[in-house]
Length: 109
Image (cartoon, rainbow, N blue to C red):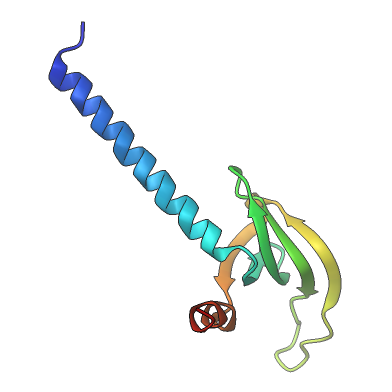
């Protein structure tokens, strides 16, 4: 049988975990419909609007454009329009939120 202090400790731990989950969820919700740049393991970069993610870190981008890894530093090439794109979490190297996307939110209030 658990003592009262053990039960209180478990309750506090559950509250802390719930609070951390709520904070993370809030941060993700604030990123919805923001422009993101995702670099992938094969060198491609996708730019689009963040629409959703899941527990496996898969990401859905809307109005996505694909930029191929250029072989020389001078040729960037034309982006390929993808539209709606799903990026598997295990292929994501980095995610950046474009600063203009964040600034429009803060100045729009």
